[in-house]
Image (cartoon, rainbow, N blue to C red; front, side, top):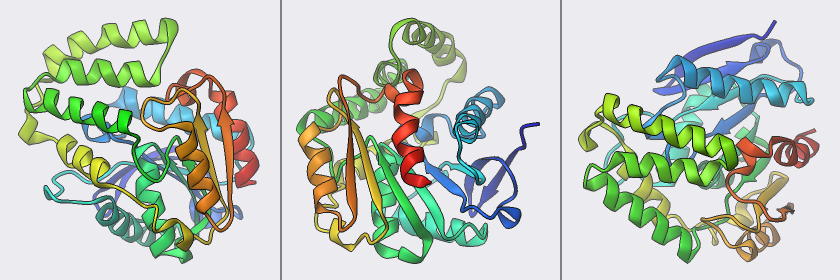
Length: 275
């Protein structure tokens, strides 16, 4: 039977899958979420918590031996919060949950947070995966995030939701998820002041960890696709090359949709590295 638990660590909502951390011989895997996390945190809706748990169950089924924690960022972050500030807060949450040292999987913007966390707190990072994240956004990625900020500021949340779907899904799954955004947009009525999306977007735009990569001692895998909408392939490669113990897994013909739509292609190198 799948062991799933919802909770909070230092204001970080989490979904936990697998055995308790204190009873596991393997380190926990901490999954750090991306830019759109404030729009739907991992415990905001049961269906979404179930989807997050299914991702954890997938990794467990494919061989990850320890517990898996997917953590969202706290609500109500100050306007000038940086990715390094987010890493500091996450470090406190991992300490409270006695989850250190942990394997860290940062997804997209979550990879930005993990870069600072692994550099500042090597005691917390066993092995690291930067999943679909380089040291900074590409020019195309910056333009995309700026456009999403403009839509959010204008209250056009439906456009933000659908752009997010387009980034992470393809084919029939994309069509289904895009269709679902219309009633969600009408029913949710999320005012801009009630969410932290702009805080996350500004932190993404300001992030540049190129001068910090040499401080990351943990073995680190960079996983990135040749069609990623936010990062150029050369940026993934340069990020891996700048790490003291870095490797790069190139996903040919794939982008941000790989986690959802081509899970096995993403999971294999990640689990090989973490094992």
